[in-house]
Each structure stands twice: as C-alpha cells, then as structure tokens.
Image (cartoon, rainbow, N blue to C red; front, side, top):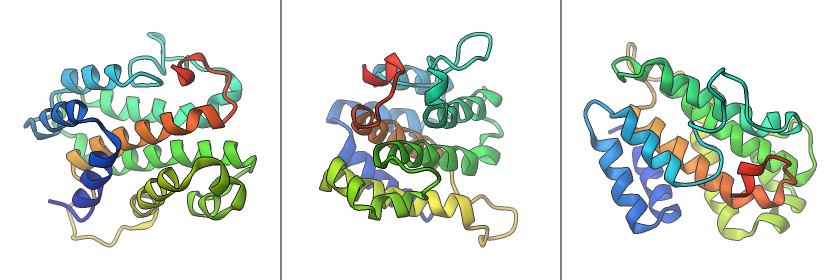
Length: 195
C-alpha cells in the first residue's frame, strides 16, 4: 500500500455508487491490471473518457476552446494505452495522477474565470467556493494534496514509485467523477461533457 492509497479509496467511496465501487474494486485488484475491464468501467461512467476523448486517428474529440480541460484526459489515455499489457504502467503512474489533477485544476480555472491558478488557489477563491458547493470543494481539496505530490514530491525511496498502479487508476476515476460534478459550471462547448 502506498502513502496515498487510503485517501484515494476514501474519496472513491464518497464519489461512487455501491455498484460502481464493486466494479472499481474488481478493476483495481486484478493483477495485472486488465485494461479492457478498465475501459469498460470508464465507458459506463459517461462523459469524457479514455475511449471518447480521442478519435481513432489520435485527434481530440472536443471543441478546441475546451482543450485545456480535456487534453489532460487525452494524456491519461495515452499513458494507459502505452502499455496495454500493464507490465510497465508503474512508470507512468505519477503522470496519470498529475494529468488527472490538471483536469480538475483546468475546470476550476474555467469556473472561476481565471487563467493559470493552481488547484489550491482556485479552491480558495470566493467565486469558486460559492459556485461549486461545500462537498465538491472538500473532495477537490483532498484530491489537491495528491495532485501536488504528483507534481512536486520526488522524495521517496530510490528505485520505487510514489504511486502504485491502483493509485493511478483511482486518481483517474476520482478526477472523472469530480469533473462530471463540475462540467455544468465550466461553460464547456463539448457535447460529451454534458452527458
């Protein structure tokens, strides 16, 4: 178990329905991670996901004006697809967690009508606090700590990874659920963002 595993599971348990949690446990506990099961769960959640954020030729399926919000999910998809057999996915776990956090940071910048605020700064701003509500703000703030570690913390044991594969999958799904709670406030033009 990694340093962030408990916090990620606590967030997941608050964000997902019992049925979704059962599927999530099945996906993250599989050794090695079954990419097809990850895609199946991802698709059932609706909204932007690995299978629809990019088309078959690798182009983003979102309005160009929404690139800042959905490009991080494209990166997550790329990291997950990069090692389809999941054999070396641990090398990309930090990147997946970071891009998952950037998705939320970008949404909050949209909601607050900022440019370049960090996730923490956006969450402290009164405009964002009023618009997103107490519960979503608290969940995003908990996720902020994990996101900041992905961006800044390299002080872990030599030849280890700060995040496990399980952490990366959970962070991705937490980001997706938090994102769905924020889409309607972000004035997005992309259709799958409102599904």
